[in-house]
Length: 86
Image (cartoon, rainbow, N blue to C red; front, side, top):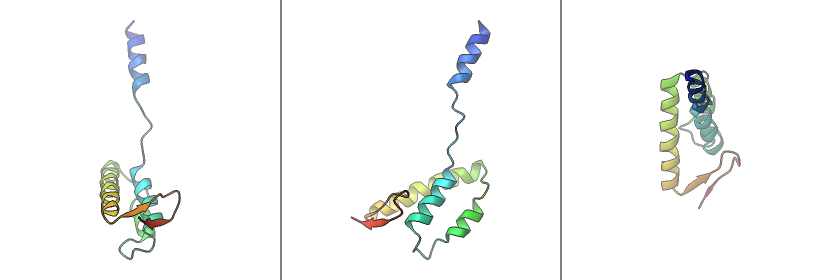
C-alpha cells in the first residue's frame, strides 16, 4: 500500500522545467534586435548553460521587459519576430 502511495505522489511531480533563459533570449533577440542596449550574442553567451539562479534572473528580466514594453505600447510575439506599435 505504501508503495502505491509513493508511486502516486511521484506521478504528480512535474519534472518538465521551463527554460526561462531561453525564453528571455528569444524575446530579446527577436523583439529588440534593433535596440543598441541589448546584444543578442552577448545574452546567448551569458546564459548558454544557466544555473538555477540565472534561470530566476532570466524569468524576472523577461517579466520586467514585457511590462516595460507594454507600458511603451510595444507588442511583440517572439514567434512572429516583428515588434509593432499599438
